[in-house]
Image (cartoon, rainbow, N blue to C red):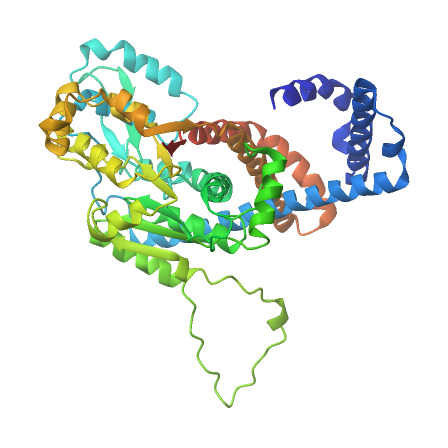
Length: 518
């Protein structure tokens, strides 16, 4: 990927000198085709292979067919991401109407671990305040020694509240970005924001890119262990621990409806094309069944999640038309049937270590852990106990954990004394001396590199944003020619903001980590 970016950087001056921005789509496609042709010739020259097969009309048609198919797949994925995005927007609006800011108190500190909490919350800020962030942060740091007021931390749900929403909350004096570090002086520090939910971009990444990738890896691993005569595997399961508003479920459900949650293998997978072909031969065209489960203890959140489930995903009963009214079915053919995914969505009100919650965890293919224990435990010892209990439940090799923040960061914040006390309480004195948290973690899971998946999402997300901008410009202009002209200026006008958004999205994606149970 780095080599490709470097090559593009080298080509940009030439492309700009030939005004590529004024080219039409056919000219761009021709350039891409010529680059592919040049690549084939360069490969043949380097390997000594004859170039004639690549020059035959049949081979060119085959290459063009493959290229068209790849473009179609990319366009379908971009459209799926946009549809999931729109579905999440509707869900967000509904949840905001039902849950005004401040209606439910949220934890902002780790009990018994004040210093770690402050550091941790700063890293979990969902977004920067404005262009003066770095300057204000520096001012805050300079005044730390003289500060008499602790940094305030506001719980701001990343899914529910965008940057514009935060501005409205600040204007309404429900939030504050800055605070005075010393009463009566001008030293200004930035308040911290913490979120216990994924942002909308993170949810798109999870549901349309990361989950499909991880599920493919899980299928491959279980297929390798399965006997040839074995029956079809059990349904796959994604379990979100502490599901709160259920946003992981809703994003996954929208992706499932769009065919984006379960995707065929691609060349970014680790085992390569040969393994993919074997996998396809073993499973045929059968699509694995995926269930998504949210485990949540809070009855209020569970009730609200049931409301979302009924509103957006349950089949609706249609009332019979009145006999004296003519039924207009002229637009019936334009209505696209949406996949009923209600039977794949499950809400469990339970402690994740007992009853139905523990059962869901033990059978999960993928477990989602986001700020899952530390802010909700009564003490550091209870926090440490949670991880030891989790290890007993997630005992199947090949299970995946999707975590934010990184497990190394979370466990490194547990004091040795608290860990030893929890170890004795959970494992007993016969288990011997406790392993240090990070050493214990290395025997539990291994980190999985998903940088290629993240890079693919960032590229596709940029394309889906461009499509959305095109649609908005078309609506505003009302005329194709005006749309083309207006889009050019609008894109230029928002260029800086788009770059900022891209940097923020990339930072959010980098805060999601994947682990495989050993």
